[in-house]
Image 1 (cartoon, helix red, strand yellow):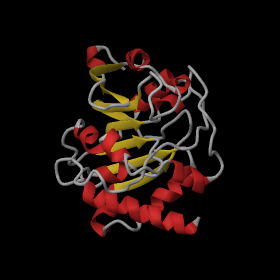
Image 2 (image 1 turned 30 degrees about the horizontal axis):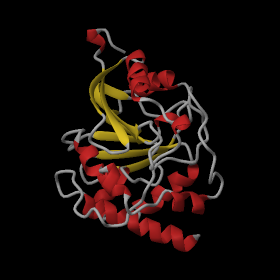
Image 3 (image 1 turned 135 degrees about the vertical axis):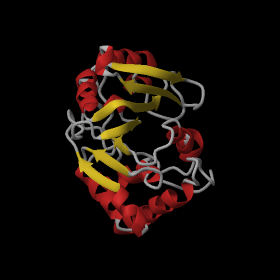
Length: 251
C-alpha cells in the first residue's frame, strides 16, 4: 500500500503542476491522473442509498478512483473555468477526497480548502501538500468535516465546488443552507454529478440525483440557479448557482 500511496501522491502533484496553464485548461488529456474525489459512501441521500463497494480498504478505494481517461470525460479545466478568475479568492472543494479538483485550483486561487468527512483522505491530501512547490503550500488547507456540516467559517468561501458528491449528502436542503452560511454574499456554487440513463460511466441510476431535483433543492435552500449545462460533459451535468443576496430576499 505504501508504494501505491507514494506513487499516487506523485501523480496528483504532477497533475497540479501541469494541468493549470493560466487559463484553467488541461495541457495533456492523456496524462494519467487521479480519478475520484469522493470518500467511501458513508451517508445516504434523501432519494437512495449509495453503494458500499470498497469501503474500508483505502488502497482498493483509491485504486478504484484512478482512471487515466477521467481528464477526458470530466474536463476539470473547463469546469474550473466556469468559476471565473479565482485570483485572491477562497474556494472550498466539498468531498475533495484525493484532491483531484483541489490541487488543480491551488495555483489559481488565494486559498483552496479540501473538505472531506473521511480522515484517510485528509491524511492523503496532507501528504500531497508537503510535495507541492513551496510557493503553493500556503494556498492549500485540508479540513475534516461532518456529514451534515462542511465546517466552513461564516462567509469564508468566495466559491464552492461539489463534484461527484452531491448524492452522498443526507438532508441536502439543510446541508445547503448550512453551506450557504460559509459562503460570502453572491458566492458561486458549482455542482457536477452524473446524469441518469444507465450510462457506461458513473454509478447505477438508482444512486443518481436528477438535475431537476438538484435545481429544486438549490432553490429551496435559497440559492439562485444561474446556469444548467447538460451537454458539455458526456456523462455529467453541470449546475452553477449563486448564494442569494439577503437584500433580495434570499438566504
